[in-house]
Figure 1 (cartoon, rainbow, N blue to C red):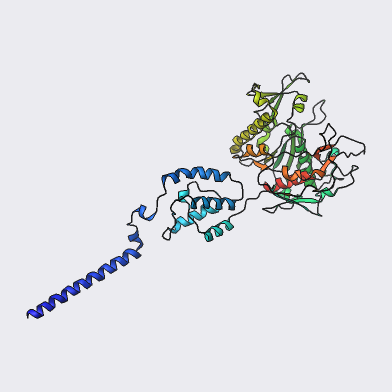
Figure 2 (cartoon, rainbow, N blue to C red):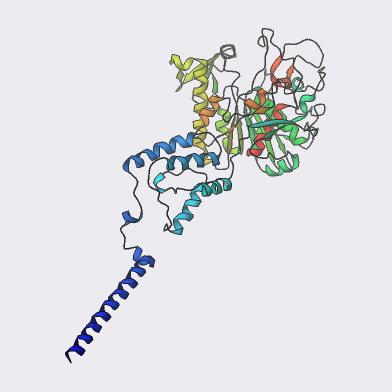
Amino acid sequence: MKGGFNYNMMGRLVSVTLTALVCTTILLWAWEKNPFADTLLLARERFPIPSIDFMEDSPKNSLKSMKTKGNVQGKDIEETNKIQNSGAAPIQGKDTPSATIDETKKIENSGVAPTDYALSPIMDEHNLNATSTDQPKVCNFAKGRWIADIRRPLYSGFHCKQWLSAMWACRPTQRPDFSFEGYRWKPDSCEMPEFERSSFLRRMQDKTIAFIGDSLGRQQFQSLMCMATGGEESLEVQNVGKEYGLVKRRGAIRPDGWAYRFPQTNTTILYYWSASLCDLVPLNSSNRTTDVAMHLDRPPAFMRQYLDRFDVLVLNTGHHWNRGKINGNQWVMYVDGKPNQDKRRARIDSAKKFTIHSVVRWLDSQLPSHPHLKTFFRTISPRHFFNGDWNTGGSCDNTTPLSGGSEVVQEGSSDVVIEAALRGTKTKILDITALSQLRDEGHISRYTIRGTAAVNDCLHWCLPGIPDTWNELLIAQI
């Protein structure tokens, strides 16, 4: 009996022990596999928290990276490298919720640098390459090369007499070579659509394109008129200059601008002369020889008056910012409605920068109430006077296209003043400086219709010519 009792007791102990082992095993297995049990862990045990130093450095690094030049893919690689080298513990792991990964992908594909690096995933090399190749490239239209194209020019220099000033039509002159007409601009990072005038007018249906600037702006305006009409006379195109006050005043050589409308699509293209982009107000309107107040901080009255009628606005300035032009036009610098007393601002380069920044800031303040308006600021058109200037025997006799090279490889603009003024604004840069610098053979030079010797014009361009490309770049970005 005693022996049987002992055996029974031993059997019970073994059973209890086995049961306990089995239950413990089941609990451990469930703890490891059950996602709900995982939620009982403290947050800091599941997600390592970055150090305070890393969090403080994040905004600084983000700002710096956003200023870095390059395409979107390059920025993403740089951002990822900064995170990997920061020493912060990675947040993405095998247990990261799928929703977080999806949100991260949305941020990456947007092309916007993350504002808080602590929320950015650490990607291995395979994932990094896959992400970067999926991202759209940002097109830099100013970076590319000139290539020969037998389909150029876009219109005839002989037939576009209705819109083209005789002084800029080089075909009727004694110029012997016109090979400069047979090239087009090809950006590196994107395709620029071929210009087709009927398609362009359909796109611009019920819209107004306005050019405001100096004589180079007028050349771009005349170029677009020739492009839109195919370089042919068109009786159906209406002169609507009166609607904008663009009429020739008594005693004036020409009106302050021109405006034409294509009735089939109700497309208006206009130009207004404002060489400095300042508001010019005669100090004594009854005296034709009076000085003129040049309001550096106020855009032209024409722009302020008709801005609500524009759908596309293209500005330019530059070559009238010299002491000879300012004194010759009797322009007196004004700021805040009073003669400028700031000697530093009175310097030509400072006054030009101040004016450009003032115009751009004013436009930016107007855009919220003009959501349909797209604004562009064209960079300066280069001069090509060699062995002197326009009044000291300078010339531009080269007729060989692209003798100085055919490609632009730089990322930023050669016009740093315009580039700086537009940074952080909604006005786009129409960057034509570097690509035009390669085309010194495209100027009017010394050739005239009469064939007589004349002062070399190495500032303005033959039409058809380089300004046609400016308009192709413009149309591609509208």
